[in-house]
Length: 525
Ligand code: BG6
Image (cartoon, rainbow, N blue to C red; front, side, top):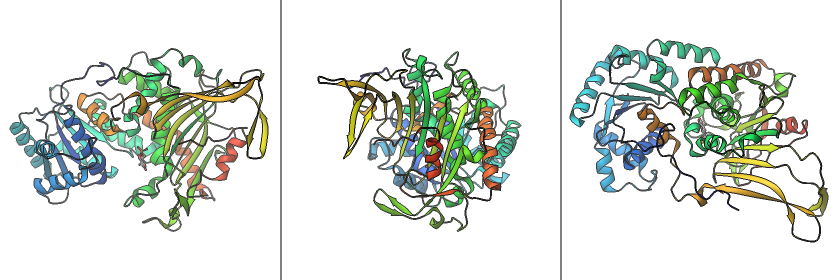
């Protein structure tokens, strides 16, 4: 059953709703030889350009340490994006148009020496292309280069002052800090060189179409919002599950990071903020950040007991995922044999405010789980009286069941959808309960493909719209909550609980919900 057949799409900025003229600025990507540039940034820039959102005059400059000509950089990018852009293959005409704006700059990002030359190259390019001196620098580098690179941009005269019309915006990939102290230190140091409106801290989950739709669903409709509070909601489950283990070459980064820093501290907490926040006074960056911050400040442990009773870490052992043998985390490339890094986190948290007091939010993320699925499931309270029963059988086992609790499920990926489940009467001479769903499914409702998160976010940087980025105080509030948990795990005698690759995580994570009389959902695919 389809409850929504068409929704007006908002192709422009969240505030205007209008499609703007193509953005014109130089985009320089630091760390241009990396995987992110090839897999995400370049396909996104191509699609933006192909859809007319990026001006023909905008140069895209790949910056990295290796020596390379423009030509060989272009060839590499062609290999990387062909077959990975929205339309599939890149045609000869498209490539001729797009590759004209691709340039390469060899630069040791960590050393101040080449920055003056880099600035001259940008100025020459901008003169030739007839574009203005507005620039986006995308830091797709390792985080230890964030600060030196910005310092050198400053010394190289690449950071414009407050009173000039030209602008520079710097995008920082995660991880932004390793814990609360390092995030605060990095923010403090960057603030000496850049204003907050020049800093874009990316969390690609916020660029996902389905994630943006949470806000429109909640605040663009009047029927659901009155239900989202402690009077109606029994609990909320947020899952970001992945079936993959470590991608090639990521072992070094991941082992220093773990599931808490890699996904829970950012993607999962951001999803929680969007589903739990109050309506902003206006739909603009400041008001949205303010409301998300209030949620993070109200975050509290799910139990009064020890941290291990509400925050669980796990690490995958060998198993089968999708019928394929998967090695244990400890056997992955570049992972020390005695690593205690968690590849799974489950937490029970509360949001101590008027709306949500007493409603548990169960959060979980992990690698090598049975499937790749991200969703937010809101389970409502049972009706106060159970008037209807029915017999349900699974094989030979039958039981008398009442109505099932209503659920509202936001499927972020894959099979993007929103589903509301409720009970109906099975046709017949008796009152027999039958569970059904009303769903809105993106594929059925819209013919166009969903844009990639990076497309939307890159366009927002070009437009100067930081709504879908993280403000420093939000990020610090998130670190403030997770840092004591990370410290507890580090000092604990016991490491993460093992779970079999291809299972839904360690048993103690199940027990945490069973103790509350609840169970984790098994997301249906
Ligand atoms: C990234 C993490 O931020 O998000 C990865 O570093 C993870 O480890 C990825 O695989 C998941 O993103 P998505 O968009 O594939 O759900």
